[in-house]
Image (cartoon, rainbow, N blue to C red):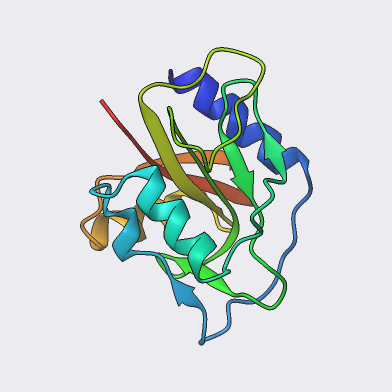
Amino acid sequence: MKSTVFNTLAAIASLGVTFAPLPCYADELDRQMDCTSSPHEFIGALLDNQSIDPKPMRIEANSVNSFRPTRGTKLSAFGFHVYAVFGYEQDEPMFKRGSGQPVKPWTYGVVVTAPAASVEASVRRAGSEATVHEVIPFLLTAVYCNGH
């Protein structure tokens, strides 16, 4: 399970990195990353308020869908700029199926532009139980929740 999530995160990173300073008016996703939501709730809210593009920028073989923030939307998580949002929930129509075996039972998260050590410290200070994983050393870090 972990290796498929890590492969997905690496693929997201391969799409290219946009570095931008974190503006003080960014929409914060900290509360939603407390791992008590479902992918439907997390991604659905972002789609409803048009914070992310409804068309996934990438669909992994394991069905994890990656979404880009919409133009002009500034998202942050734990004080860091959000590069991408991702998730998948089985039998949820908002997610497109990939060509392989879907991740089970579900996952959702963000990729932020910051080193893993800084992100890990911020996530723990916030009291989140989210998993933190370095995608590209010193550049991109994933913060995600998944069902057990």
